[in-house]
Amino acid sequence: MQQKREVKVLLSDSFKELVLEKPVEKITIKQITDRAGVIRVTFYNHFQDKYELLEWICREEVINPSRILFQNGMQREAVTLIFTALLKNKVFYSHVAHMTGQNSFESILRKLISETITECFPLSASGRSEKYGWISSKWIAEYYSRSFTFVLMSWIDKDMTVPPEEMVKLYELITKHSLIDPPVEI
Image (cartoon, rainbow, N blue to C red; front, side, top):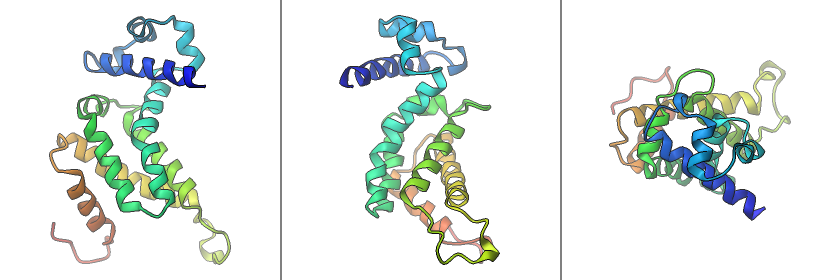
């Protein structure tokens, strides 16, 4: 198991180096494996494609470290850790943030955040009225993952100049006020 993880780390390091040199869309599996010093079959033993590799990197570096905090009711700390993890590899995440389309970084990040919210905050079916029976854990997770991902992507787009702790305060301010409330001064 440890050897499998080591190969994934080797491939991810190779991919991260290549991302700094060229757009993700122009990176080939052969380039990743050549730089990692492994054969192409090795890549496909671990990942379907470079987008699955990117998802693994995001899960390992950004989402998994925050998961234990979410599970223990430490949402503020978890959100701060997500911002901090992105900032730690600012150049890499700034590059992949420009990906568009079906396999965009934004869609990968949103999916991972939604999965984490669904896992960490399951919505109980008891006590729900029939009137709002269509609201599920997945629906709530999608709402929060879209809004949080929007804030993260905007922050990355603005070169991550605002410190993570300030971004958490800003996110908290925005999420505590609805569109129905009077406008918030920021």
